[in-house]
Image 1 (spheres, rainbow, N blue to C red):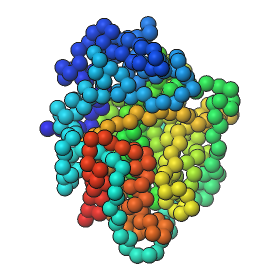
Image 2: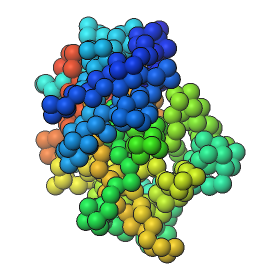
Image 3: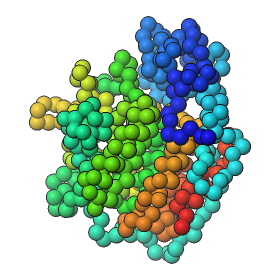
Image 4: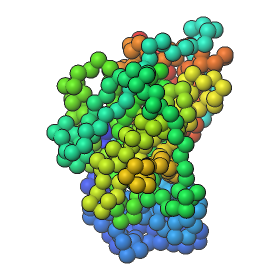
Length: 423
């Protein structure tokens, strides 16, 4: 039976008797220098006189010590346990629990995991030669925040984030929908407050979610935060499925389900994401306000605010834009009690070799949810002349996740087409 919805960590491999704790069992070679570290029983790493929450945190620290300007993505394949790459042990765990297989056949549903490799794409004929247009009455869904540890908070007393969305009239949004260009930490002569590593599966799921309807979509990001290394690791995306007519009870149940899943996976809230369907992936005044509220809810006793915001711009109605989505991350710095500035956050991508069962299940779930909504995308219609929405989506996903090794080149896109055109 497949292990669904569980993030793979060093502790997972230890409890499964794949790895054993030990002194100097981990090595990391970078630019001619070798680092060694101890693997502790709880899955943390001890090296350089410090404790690290994950392989990414340890390797990133070592890399930055030698070459801080290089933005190389550090993954499990760069670190060795007793001389063998950690990625091989991770693959052993995946295969043991049937999360992946080099010989997987493409199933007729989403009950298996899929890989992606650049290759031929099957073109889906559009319904007509008419370019698709958004429905006339689409308004923007915004996310509400309740701070102060209410019982409906996403992680109870710690976060207090409620999934309480409401549709606003366009006139009411006119003052808050203005886009605010992000400055860079470097331009301001400041250092980014934390390093961020994002799983490529998270990027893929956010991009897929953003292509499903003409309205804004949103979700939460679960991960880990290492306060010693000031490092955020974004492990999972949790899409929110919401209808404007949903009652507060429905929203509370949605939030409770996300809370339960996040806790069971051993994760905490490290951010959120939302889409700008046809505008730039740049925060609006309203987005900046929401981000500030999120940062306040996760603020630590040391005053740190390890929470980031992702914006995905799928360019649904902008035919002159690039076919792939624009994806940006931001954080807000307070200047004083009255002023705050959004700043671009740089991140590295942890390339995953497989689409896990949990991500496949989420893609199936949100596809089913949006299929019958009035504002859903018709993937047989044309995004622009000669380019159906289905082809646009697959091209964008291939850009986010260029390659899943060891899998059939058609399997992932076959899976996507099954999701999009299932009746």
